[in-house]
Length: 136
Image (cartoon, rainbow, N blue to C red; front, side, top):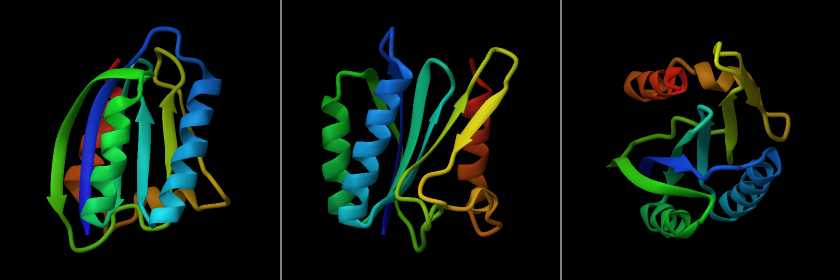
């Protein structure tokens, strides 16, 4: 099992339809490869975690690097792990909706939002995403 986390900057003019497309393709690709993950958008930048077999994660990450809807992709974590932090999510998404910090969690396929607060989730990963979502 392998976990990769990266950050990137969204291109100007990225619309909700673009993000919906990213989520739909990600969910389909991840289901086929038994990858799980979480995508966060703080209004300007993305942070994404991908988990699964190392080769599969790296193949998807290669596609992500080529995507023209963002730039400045930087991997911040790439590590073997014993278990998944997002075991039930082929891909979920969280965005900050406004400058005051209002946010939306989009739960895909009737998955429980409680899984985000899984007490077994690594604290450093939870802290990392929490800090990222507060940045604007």
